[in-house]
Amino acid sequence: MQDTAQIRTRLLARRAELMGRSEAVATDLRHERDPLVADFADQAIQRENEEVLHGIDESTRHLLQQVDVALARLERGEYSCCSRCGQDIETERLQAIPEADQCACCARRHSA
Image (cartoon, rainbow, N blue to C red):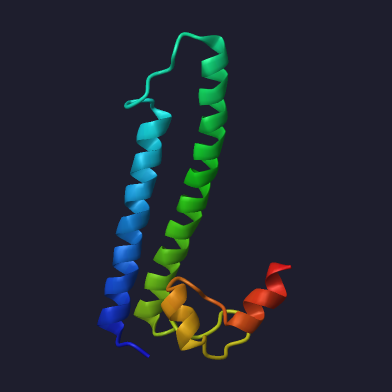
């Protein structure tokens, strides 16, 4: 497993990426780059796009929360320990999903 400093760096980079995504979505929702058009049909399309943006924003906020929890778990020395079964989270899983708090088995079992 990577050392704590490398993990923290990776999580902070992930956090910065997600914050950038959140800011971009907020800008799009304020229509700073693409003001609402006068045509009603085009406005309807823009409103549909807003629904998608709200979904992206919700997902991003959830991921940010997971990254913050992972950083807290790292500080407590619990980063690689599954929050469900207490076993080690697979290194490959943490490399792929640094904010993961469950081993692959528990994640599969509880995602259904």
